[in-house]
Image 1: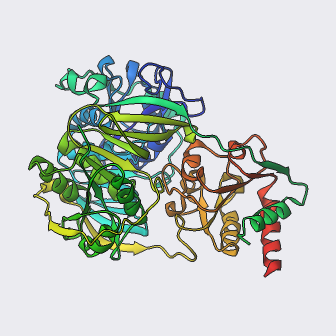
Image 2: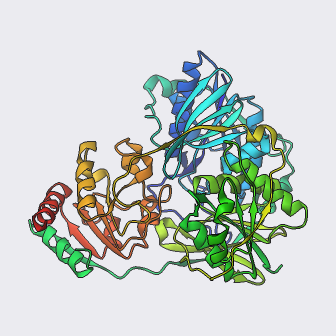
Length: 259
Length: 322
């Protein structure tokens, strides 16, 4: 079974995020790393391919400046290869533009199953995987907390507001997995060494046969008009607990008539 | 382009529209003269309430036969747009199904989507949306720049739900055209997780635990404290990811948005992911041993201390009150 995992390489979340003063887009020029949220999809893909008795896990990513650091992390976990779409014309793409690019790249890997995180940690639009499914004419099951493949169908436990639904879906399909669905493995030293020589196919928008006017800032049909500080909350009271801190909480709850 | 007609995708559970659906209808009335709703399943049964909150018409996609709503509901709306009877904007709740419908509708209409919307205003004859970014410290304003309906996915509790006293909405059948393989997923069973006490997003008091609890077993004291305060127990993404508590408890950017009278964060540092979901609570109490934790910047009352000491004492004191 061939599984494609969509992975995003994002600015290190530990560093303060910044917006480009002109476009107001998130600055993504520096070193990028594998989005933590995507490690779950990679782990799930590796486990499903194993359980199916073979097949390849292919990573698909879109990133500026030919960035591969995040891909190498996922390759070190055990993915076989990667397809990276990197092209200056892609800067400023909205989620639909991104989905068009990823969908075109995904079809090259001829997957039975496409996995993605429910949303990225930096932009968190959360619609790209479903847009990919719609572009490819495939079914999708989002917010999976358990995924099992049997023959030519996938069975998913999907989060709902009240609990979860069991959903059955024929392959090929797009499934998004919630964080925590599996425990991502740490890359071994051997894995890290092997990842250095695993194939990464570099593609441009033209390679995918996509019109450059459809993607990037040129194709984006939304714009950011303003960014301003939110109303700050007034500074609160800070109490250092020396054994009596809980009493102040009780008092506070009494003042609010919660008690 | 002026905004004459807005469609609200309304989710109906057990015959009643969800609160977020009513919030969207209420706000839509201030933006457009024509406000209509889209429902599926037994949603048409809620035409009375939907009308009371401002919908004049309910477009009923009908029984989905176990399918997930994403593909058929998007196809129904896209068919109306193609037929010239569509809206100028579609508002959807930021729920599991709402996002699915928005993503598929976006492709069908070849229009982008704006998600995580926390406010919508009229501007130059169109709509501008506001989004809380960087953990809610900055507000970003965005708008669509091309013709065609705007698709906005709006977070819960962005607007108050206020009835307009409207008459029951007229129900119009709007069955989905065949969407083929895209609509092949089927729900074969539904499971409701047991819950004691109020719902997380409706509770007056929410007590949440985070990584500072140290280990899974310690979450029991969060549940106990929540129960003593007649509230609901929540969690940060860190401990949901770690498998300590089910995803349904998660408060944050992914997960629930809460706005209780009191939000009590125990052992939560206040990552941006978490802040987006609770920053607008009326009162925030934080208990954390790290005095530099970002959660203290939004706390009305911050206790710098060990949750393993403060919370048990709090529980004991509440129990003593009876």
